[in-house]
Image 1 (cartoon, protein in one colour):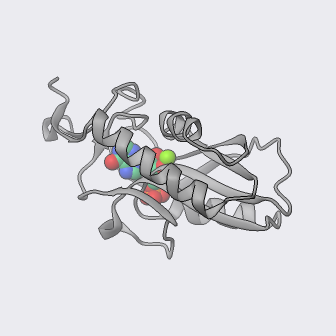
Image 2 (cartoon, protein in one colour; image 1 turned 90 degrees about the horizontal axis):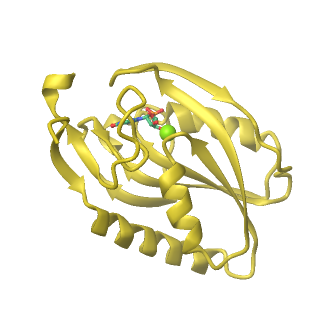
Length: 176
Ligand code: IMP
Ligand code: MG
């Protein structure tokens, strides 16, 4: 596929990562119940794979967050559509995110959610680009640390396309 320069997380590797993260979460939250908050749209595939491996009772809710307005440039502006239908007060909440880069998106969301007084609030991200971090945000569960390149697939888009690819790949620079 011409849009992909290199696959950096294969389908098999994703399955292994999801398995590992789920078992960490199952262990850490043993005896508890959690509310998973999936950040749309990039986290859909990750959420649905991860939740199938969870043994902890969980509720699921969604927020729509966008910072990339098409293309590969982070505009720095975070837009949130807060459609949560679950009251998270006194709940153990786990944010499920596709990729953590500058941290602006999660910083914004963590602030919003903390105002609702959850009992605990943690972050699980499939991918992490720590070298591009600007905000003071760390994930509690990290699937894989990757280089700074723009990636797509497995939920991640380029101009809203390619979310359906079953793997994560680096974009061919000629598209940038
Ligand atoms: P941050 O606010 O800079 O941490 O960016 C996080 C958001 O930007 C993620 O939730 C993604 O939706 C998007 N994003 C960051 N890096 C990439 C990438 O390499 N490919 C596609 N989307 C990305
Ligand atoms: Mg995202």
